[in-house]
Image 1 (tube, rainbow, N blue to C red):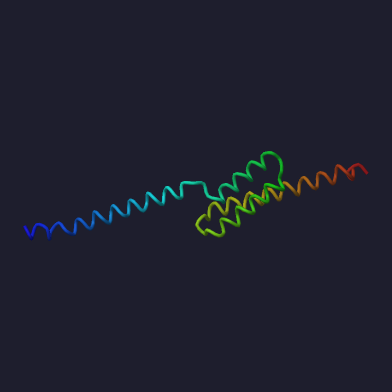
Image 2 (cartoon, rainbow, N blue to C red):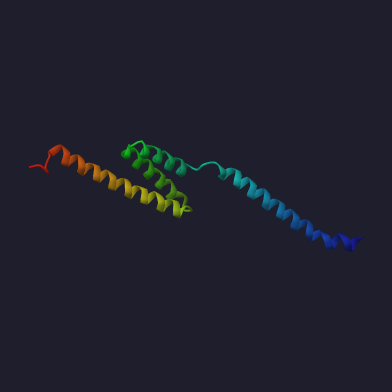
Length: 109
């Protein structure tokens, strides 16, 4: 009987390690399942951009970018936010130029 317990004792430790690892991954999943702050800020930026408020959208994207830089794990998300900011800056510059042309009627004179 002594030899029987000595053979299967390491298996109990393996099962214990597997059980603890599964528990740790479950807790980690539950914690990270909630939407993170950078994603919430990005969604807010998308909504304000869709409503036409580009200045507020740019602020939301910049805040999301700052939060992503703190975590260092979301490189592709960081690149996506940077691209959105570039597009927003281009749109804002285009609108500014269009307003300048329309207000001054410089193309007529």
